[in-house]
Length: 141
Image (tube, rainbow, N blue to C red):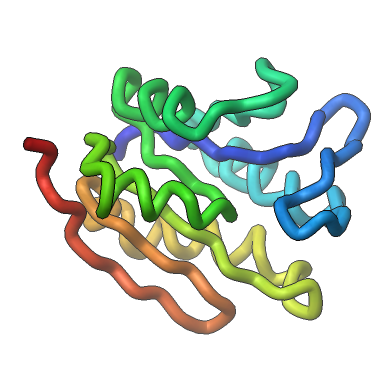
């Protein structure tokens, strides 16, 4: 399976988060745990927050495409980039976990990658607690 890009707005060293789009802080304990659990399972994970303070979605998508990485994100804008702007991507996983289910996020991400790994390439996936929806990404023109 291709390596994984995880777009996290967390600095692993400090555990601090920038505010998300709704202006609410997220819990770094559970969010970055998904990165740690994937790495401990042997996946090559590049967490954007580890090498970039601020990220531009289009640039993150280009990095993922250039390095053939599946992009895991909580940012719905990546759906727009994939489906409306037709920006080429090897795959996007949109994570939609409410605060009440954050503790289940790391195991859910690991199960997704383990159970559906080969289906993630070229797909747009929505991961919710207890639910996975996989759609084929449109081809770039």
